[in-house]
Amino acid sequence: MHVCMYVIFSARNLVSAARLETDMRLSNSEHESHAWRISEVAPDFRLEDVWALPAQGGAGDFATLLEVMASLDPANGESRATRALFSIRYRVGGWFGWDDAPRRLAIPDDAATTLSARLPEDLRNPLTGPDLSSYGFLPLYSTDVEWAAELSNRTVHAVMHLAWVEKDRGIYQGQMGVYVKPRGRLGAAYMTLIAPFRHRVVYPALMRQIERAWKARMAQHRGPGTFTSPPSRQVCDRDG
Image (tube, rainbow, N blue to C red; front, side, top):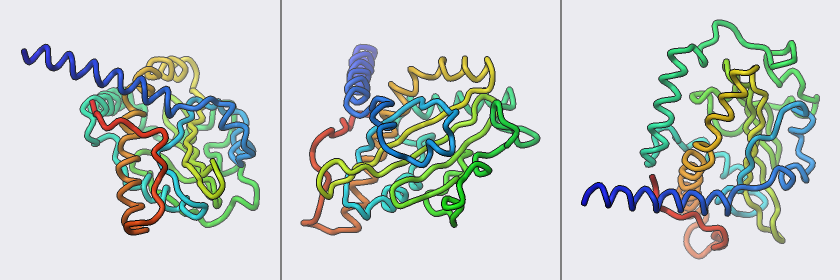
């Protein structure tokens, strides 16, 4: 009986994750159709994943999205599957030293070790936004509608790009793009290996965390009876 219930529960989560991937995952062209500044900084990086975030608000709410992203802890969230995957990743990374380079590694096919060396003058501003250094991400730049941070280890050099996109008159939605440059065959194989787990487990769980945190933060900031996110693209609240 318990085995049957577990199988049914797991199947429901897989269906939920597949539906969420279809609803929230965007095409690369949709993200690249905007004149984002990241294209100037990392033109040689591949856009690996793009997701519409379950966070909508007004033109001035991008800072709130950054606060929400800083409050998240995907590695220790409610999703058991996600916690297990992060645990395995950290353990394997510890065994092979993927995250503990004795010196800063150069960007693949580049002598520089950080994309900050490529920033145009107007983006070399005092950085604001989420502190994701505990996950290895170091901030690069921020504008009124963009924020970017980079991560470097022995498998990839990657960039998380957050954007605030106008969807309708006065209504904006968060968007996240992940850009990567794999390090040789190991990095390319690693990205291929983890792709199905990212799309079906990690990102869906992250979207649920973002939706819950966004709703709580907006209610706190605005109070009852004010703007709330439209009901489109609601994230299913089942967790794995």
